[in-house]
Image (cartoon, rainbow, N blue to C red):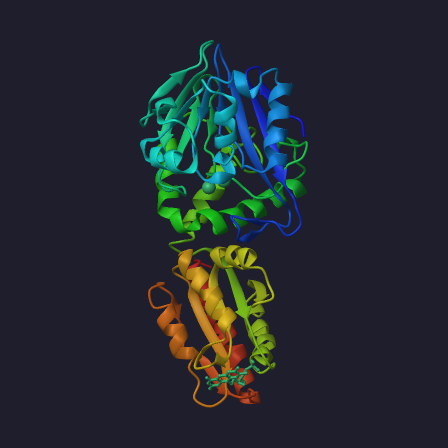
Length: 409
Ligand SMILES: Cc1cc2nc3c(=O)[nH]c(=O)nc-3n(C[C@H](O)[C@H](O)[C@H](O)COP(=O)(O)O)c2cc1C
Ligand SMILES: [Fe+2]
Ligand SMILES: [Fe+2]
């Protein structure tokens, strides 16, 4: 991997994680890979903004790219630690052993994390406050803005004043490996659409829980004159930095609803009885012309389910009763939607039971705090009758109408 010269004094150093089966945060499938970006700013002194994970292939690639810029790890004067999650800070331990004089700048809240995650002597750490700056010489002034809880409490963004470039770490990031085309203006329409989808899934998986803090961060950073947004995952936005800010604003707004005029249908079935309700539900929803995404649990990937559910205004859950509760993979999926604060949706539930049921009560209990507007459920014993199937279609249609109305259509 080669470093990318962004300007005379700014370089991007980037690594891609593309191993098959790799789970980001040990949890999220990234079938299209994910990049981890660091940035070198050179004045009279040099600063590296964020690092990478402590996997040898990544740290050695970062080192090589640093050498391409004519610098070495040992020569760096500062490391700016915007965020202590180990995808950006894992390398600190190894780095601190190689460079015994550089100083580490971070927010106050990052200090205990630095202490416990890395072996850096605390007398090499400088705390920066909101709005404080670091002058690297030759006009290269970095200014720091605290953006807590996007998505860890210690997070800050770094702004390079003379170049109007914001380094916001995870904020405005996206999944998707980045190869030679690093900037938004180098992408085909197709590739740009790809990164937009990857940004939504990244948001839903990593940031969604903290949407009110995303909104606060955007409001705060609005005061800056931003020409370039250089996040630590995904592409760099220099033709239209407002695009990714607006995407994030929109994603954050989905928490309050309405989101997009779409429906996300999740279903699980052991023996095919609940499955029979899917076709009429789909017919009913589609009769209203709404976009629909369909996922099966446990077969389909949770990260993709979360992204689709986050973006949709309507949710449909179809699952049978299992040991007096919901079919377990659906209970798990719903639990994950609760953790990510998927809120304010229009919702319908259907499902089969054998003798007394139990899924319905479990479903209502688990979703009680989600602020969901849930229609009366359609439950049936064993196999659905023709009458049940007609009701499914009708309920699918009614949910779609409700979604359209909520979306102002
Ligand atoms: C392992 C297992 C546990 C079940 N537990 C219950 C139960 O607690 N209460 C109930 O009413 N039905 C229970 N059932 C019956 C199913 O809900 C019923 O067979 C239903 O039609 C399955 O729907 P499906 O074909 O969509 O999987 C259970 C079935 C299985 C296989
Ligand atoms: Fe993070
Ligand atoms: Fe990250």
